Length: 264
Image (cartoon, rainbow, N blue to C red; front, side, top):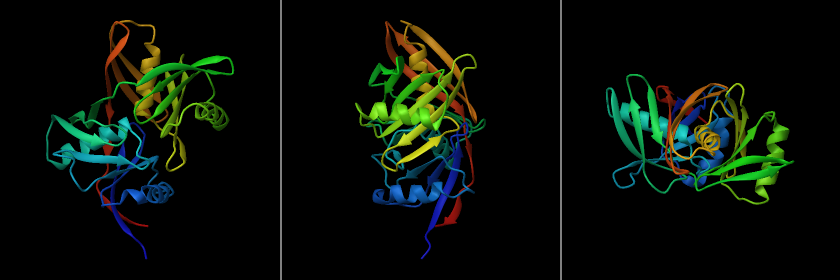
C-alpha cells in the first residue's frame, strides 16, 4: 500500500532540501530519507522533518540523520515566517537537530533571504593528511575538514573520511574542497545514520568552517566572506576577539516551493 506524504522543497543556494510536513516517527527517518532522495523529480540532497509537536513555544525541525544543517535551519525559519503571513523582515526562534539550544533566524520574506546565528565550533584543529596539515573544525552536529587545493573527487573524500574515522565518530562529516585562487568551495557531506554521501550544491556549516579556517591567524575584528559554491553563493560573517570566535552568521537566498503531496 502506497503512503502519501505532504512535502515542500527548499533551495538555499542549491543545497536542495526535502521538507516533510506529514508526521513521521523518528525510527522511520532513515528509510524515508532514502526513498525521497531516490526520486529524481525531487532532486534532493538531504531530507528534513518538521515535528508536529512544539518544544515549549518553539517549532522543531530534524534532519534525516539527526545532524545539524545551517542551510536547512535558514530555510525552516523562512518557511515559518511565510506560514505566519509575515511581510518583510522578522526574527524567528527555532529548535533544530544536532544543537541543544534554540537558534534565531532573521528573514526577509520580501527578498527571500534568511540568515541564522550559527553555533560556535567546539574545537578547531589541524589533521595531518599525507604530509599536509588540513584544518579540522568540529561543531556540535557535524565535523568539517578543509581540503585546500585538493581535487574534489570521490577518491579524495574517501581517503580523508577513512583518516577522520580512525580518531573521531561524528554523526556527519563534511570535506570542503577549497580552491583559494577562485574562492570556490565544493562541499561533500556524509551522514552516518543514513549512510548517504552527496556532492552538495552548497553547505552552510561547511562555509562557516571555512571562514573559521581563513581567519585562524587573525586575532580580532569582524570579517565577511562570500563563498562561491557549485549551485550558489553563501555569505559568512565571523566575529573574533583576542583570537576567540565570538559570533558566526550564515546568510543567503532561499527558494521555497509550494507544498505538494507525493506517494511512496
